[in-house]
Length: 411
Image (cartoon, rainbow, N blue to C red; front, side, top):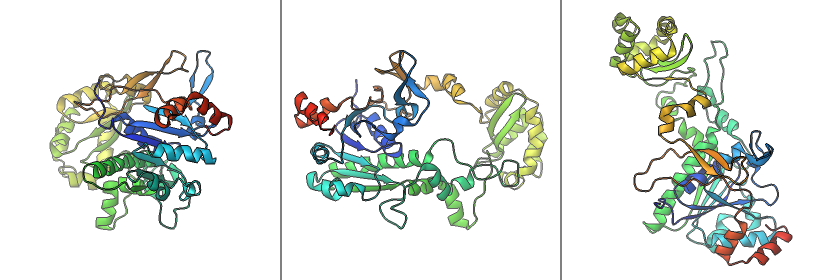
């Protein structure tokens, strides 16, 4: 089996819930050894974020929530109480053996335990220390706690997501997934790899990386933010309308929803031909992309009844044959039943000691490597599953020493 691109990297994951664990999971998928640190007894907060929970052989809920499962594959789990001096000493000893530390505690919280960057770089000057917080390490809001929906609101995403104010159901809308966490986690994962490259190739020292969920969310508004910064015009919500050519929106067929994007004039003309109205390609209101953007309401009024007369499957086939981009509005069951998604291997199975059938299904990493493929998926660990192994391998502790720590509540 090919080694992952980060197979020589060891990560201490002291983060909880989503953004930090997501970043650590990305590194684990790439082959890094990721050691997740959990509180004795309670563990990662996300273990409680259910239902649903993974079921055991008797049909009972385990402590493995679907939320926790989504963001902790390919990791090891140890337990350690960092509020105890012995726990802090264990973390410092592990840091000496690690390349990366990830944490998402409140700003300044780890300083009281001597586990902040300034303290730990004395233990390991080569350490890449990444802090993920809601508002960052600096700025007037840095002490505040926060969650994804707060950042979607404050960062502008909700203002550009949802239906316009002047239609039924209009108003700001949160996205389904917790995108602020996911995006911050992705930014953190790539920043960590850049810092490792700078250290190992360019001779830079270890360093502290500061990633804020609010910053990541704002950066990810991309062309919407650029639209405002360039023009001064505040972007508005447009429902399912996209940002390319027109039409670019959801339509209702006779038996379901379809997303259609005519990204240029040629695709638009082919769309008109499929619907049996080629004359609309030269209609003075719609002949160019800019005209279709300006006249988007009229465009919808013309095309909505034309699309509504079609069966979804029939229209998808006709548009595909004509080279017009389109897709159905799938729910999750339909997503994973799609033959293309299956061919791309986007669902994988892994052995799990608590699952009823001994297996858990996971969403695969979407990246496909030719020489170092991501092919070895390990199930998210049971809390503390690897405590003895990690402390024994890295710190030379035998089973009796670990048991003594367990009896004192350190692990």
